[in-house]
Image (tube, rainbow, N blue to C red; front, side):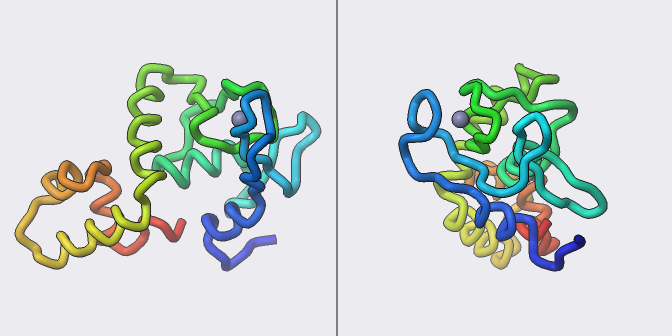
Length: 149
Ligand SMILES: [Zn+2]
């Protein structure tokens, strides 16, 4: 069932962030399809992926290399702060810091990047440093596809 609707809007509609779920009450519950192991799943053309991979893609801009681990032991939780990239724990820590920063200020970041790009006097790296996002994100915003995937 390929959908024209962007992943982000399809994804967040299926997440219940009501406090109180999970061991610390901060889990975000996946309320749509799950696989036989209890992990959330979502369609990302051309295949079905785990919801944990989808949220990683949405918050970091990249799919995890291998598998995602839950620090909260709640399989249908999709809070990126509770997830670890099982392959690269080192990179993960740095990525989480970026994720948290970006998640808190996402719309502002985006607007700021756009404004700076419009002025045309800063390199992508300079803009990334100023706003606190990765250079790849700046480039994708410039190309107009940062949040549409
Ligand atoms: Zn959790």
